[in-house]
Image 1 (tube, rainbow, N blue to C red):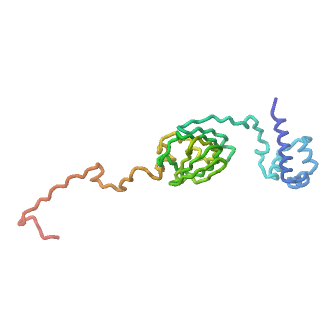
Image 2: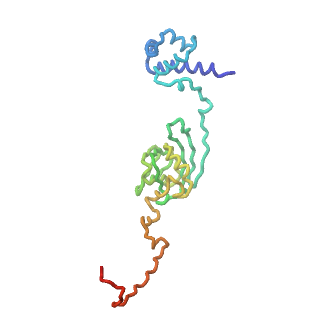
Image 3: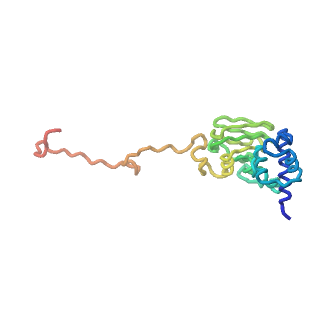
Length: 245
């Protein structure tokens, strides 16, 4: 059994649905794609085969592409059964397929008091993050500020600010939307601070090792100075001594 009849019927349905969504009559769309209204009607109802050049013209008139118009339905990929990912104090369920959301990911997170806290746990990475609280109370740490976000409330912030979401007096569940950098940072969040490239040098508002001297002198590279040779005075009447230059 071939899927061609199903795809053909889906294409015809899409043409009709897109036309009606724009409020166009058969005459309106036919005028935009150089077809007669009767031919367009027969295309929509399956009484006429669709030529490729006609399909290209119809797709362009409807503001879509040929690929989108003939793309098979993906019923098998509609349902998402997320697998929980556990890190200390955090369980995450990825609820989206990134290719459908222009590079952003939707995830549900359950955070408990076991999640490590403190200034050295704050993260920094490019991008933005949005979340809403489903149950419980979340503590949002942004730099030196701490805000309580309750059930039904939402927060949005730049992830270039050192940040951490923790639980306040009990478990909290949140629904969050992450861009690509945010999703990657959360995926690696089970590692130690500074372990991953996107987090290096940014934890806890700069609690890192003190910077070294940019141009160390050759004498100090090994950590110790070379001893200087003592000066020796030459006899004043030395015949090799000339007038001071």
